[in-house]
Amino acid sequence: MAAYCSRVYHRPVSPSIMKRSLARPSIHAGSATLRFRARRNSVSVVRCDADSPPEGRAVAGWAPPGPYTGRDPEAKKPGWLRQRAAQGEKYAMLWESLGELKLNTVCVEAQCPNIGECWNGGGGAGGEGDGIATATIMLLGDTCTRGCRFCAVKTSNKPPPPDALEPLKTAVAVASWGVDYVVLTSVDRDDIPDGGSGHFAQTVKALKELKPGILVECLTSDFRGDLEAVSSLANSGLDVFAHNIETVRSLQRIVRDPRAAYDQSLAVLKHVKNCKDGMVTKSSIMLGLGETDEEVKQTMCDLRAIDVDILTLGQYLQPTERHLRVREYVTPEKFDFWKEYGESLGFLYVASGPLVRSSYRAGELFVQNLVRRKKAELAPTMQ
Image (cartoon, rainbow, N blue to C red; front, top):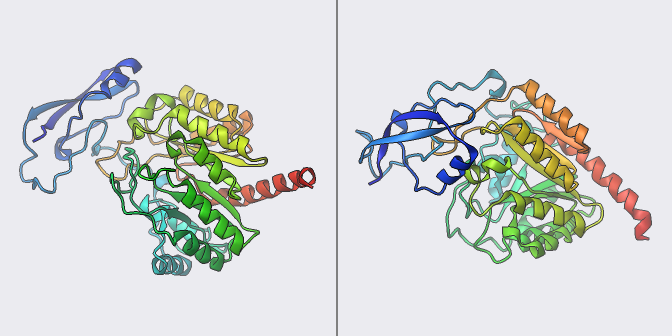
């Protein structure tokens, strides 16, 4: 049985030592005995004093966190992160529609804090919105083959096979909603030869056949760096290709599954830009994981160097005690700074705020106009 932890202390550590520490076996920690204080340029060092779970905890249900995880009992969410519980007529109708068609959404599976606002068509979680309700459809099931340490989606090495009728069901559902813009995403499916690229492409084609004027954004995995899979999706009629780099280079191995990589994500975004004239590309960075300002600036520069058009930045929030701890709650003022900095680098659009997420609805109108403008500019050259 794995040891549990009774004491935690901090010490300064160099980046090289931090990277080497990732190769060591995991040290499990009982959450009832942990007290973490986030400090820059330091890591939590866990001292283990026993070989059994905390007293009174059933072994069968014990799921201890590992290094860098656990709850900090003194950490309190600031007021700007508090959201009302989702409710409202549009929210209820969309929930019912998705349930009847057995479609998954990243809004639910990833515990997105904006679900009320988006599903109600903007204006707030309580149903005050007067716009079109939007949801991000999650293809390929609800179980991911990767285990990123920030994500609430459930994982398995052998998830159920994809629903062959899902592309058509998705297209029928979206067409019935009367929307002009839709975002599709998926779990990682490393168990499928093309990583699910073909399934994505079928869904895009089905959407375009049922509603030719609809604009489609796909927020995808890295397809294990398979550029042929990337090309297949890019040439399916897709309008916006989104892939998240997630965090700065130094934190990749801590935050993301080992099969993901900083340079691999950059390669995917660079390749898709060259696949199709007018393709709009998009990426996202989470803040509050222990990154420095200089590292965030470098990541933004790396994305602009490969001509990424749109960037979103949001606050990382810990889903459970088994996920990475929040190292910092970034203020709204600092997010405003990152928006201005991104715009100064040349991003066509930057959405930056504590509750901003990859497919946040606030940017949809701008993206729609951007895509349509690019199509209009390309039209004369294609005649």
